[in-house]
Image 1 (cartoon, helix red, strand yellow):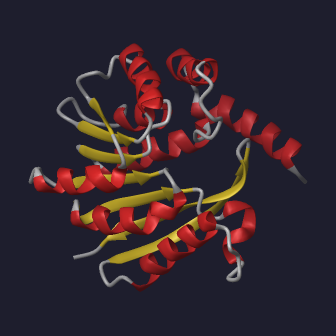
Image 2 (image 1 turned 120 degrees about the horizontal axis):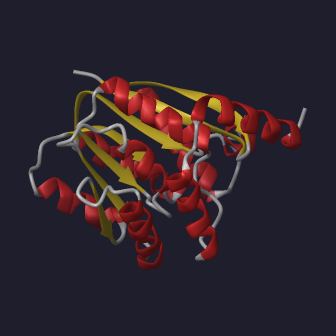
Length: 222
């Protein structure tokens, strides 16, 4: 079993259970036309985020790493009418593409994209004193994951979920001697999740159209 079979199974499950529509398909196509890197989550992963947010009853979601807005659309669709999603994106070009996709999805009033380095935007977000986020999705530079986790804890409440993508790195996460900064970043992130007294979490290894990787899910405790 390898990539070809994982992709085939993902296609079958996607058509059967996920039901990606024209808006989502066009979001992917627009990102491709704009030359954005093909690193967005898969349809099945998007549906997982939607289900997590829906089950949680999330009203406020924070996303760190917008890319083309594909994941933001999935999560925003799980929000109630008065819900709000704030997405942080470093690249102005990515944010521009995402804004177009968000508009086509009819989510302009629901999704807010803030442009800049997450390490600078997160303290500003905390200083605003807004109500806590019910869910955080981290899918940005892996070296920044530990810092993003620290801020996520400051911006959430007991019962909130903190979800982080790409934490298995094709299996490289198990290599404690790796000098890859991406591997070091996710290892540090997972070590923090494991050790933090206010978190309980796990990692689901994933295979599919995006290859071999994994998603971390952590719940904020009292």
